[in-house]
Length: 533
Ligand code: G4P
Image (cartoon, rainbow, N blue to C red; front, side, top):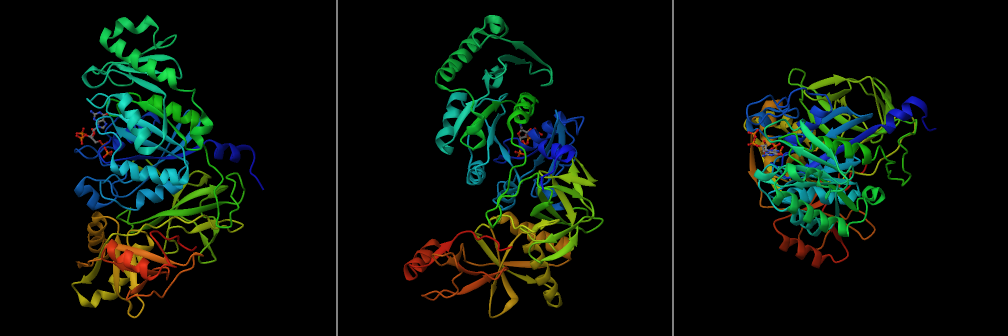
């Protein structure tokens, strides 16, 4: 049955997105300004924490605070115009981790943030690939226009050639760096002039009859006027009008320019976002029958688990993306993997620095529910008819270690902690079937994950541990052509098991992988594996 009336309207006004960027492009700053425009924070600087201002909203963990980096992801919610916007934060450290990839499984669109001086950077590209894989629409915000950078036409060309994505400039900068004077909004036909000495909110808006309208000519230098007009001549001459259909299919990215730090252009991006960002979409299931967000059956999946967000309560929170229906605090749901009923209690939403209890939430929202160990990444829940959503892919780790604990009496506790943390998705565990959990191998995709692991073992489990690095750098899951797990391989390859009992091989280098392929031509060696839920 489909919901109608007020609950249906609630679902239709949800917009859930994430910002993808390379570290230092200005994600924290842009997030802060978005929350400011959403009325959640009243002074800028409330979210930013790097340079001694107030703590970053997503800085839950001590290590993050020490390092001044954002390791974990969080969810921020605000209302803008008539919409309820959920902004999912993605970790910002240069180190590679799986967390942002999972976040992108829970959103309907993304904003690609690009530093005007640096262009498309490595991390942005990786995250962008995940968005492309899901075909989600991508907005582009080119940031730091108040600093010297690449010429806007070159940047557009860079995005188009590097990412193979067509761009549609919604706004166009008037000058750049020292000479940055504002933007031309091609959609609304407005010149928006900005004064570096004032807050970005205090702008002069001049409605024009096209950019060659001389109304604004005397307000900037002749050189800037001419250059802007010449650039716009080139764009207007070749670009077809904005095609929302192509955008929704992920084929074209609308581009806005601005300066997050100066709070300039952020409101224009936000308004454009609200006009075109898609609301909750039908989500595919393993049985290939998509679930309509308006379906009255409450459904959702766990895309993130985080322990000890609140140090006073030593809690563990499972973040559920609601895919359909309405959530009520304390409701009973069916759990896909355990095939049992559980109660979703202590639900939270995260609004700026505050964690607020939610009594109800709708498709498109994220709720954090208290978890006593029931959940693992990728689990589905439903109030009525059980569904299993498409899996969240797991990525092949590239760094491997074994762990030892100083106090040998605490070995068992260490093993339990490792299982917890791997269920949470913080690490991956590989087990030799002969010795089981006695001596598991830990795999991660980035160095920082090891640092966080050691820190958390100490901090959360009171275990003093050491990591002994192993020479492996490649993990592959052997599969038959039909996609079935293969446990026996020709050649002398030790086959380990992962936490969901799938066979996996760990190799020192690509050369070994080529050897394995040569010896076993009928086997495919998968780099990622879906979690069977
Ligand atoms: P991140 O989360 O993507 O890693 O980036 P973050 O917002 O922390 O910004 C990285 C640096 O870039 C910060 O400088 C920030 O102030 C600066 N920045 C962000 N947006 C703009 C912009 O539009 N213009 C200019 N000029 N700078 C911008 P910082 O020196 O690390 O910190 P702070 O001392 O400025 O706070």
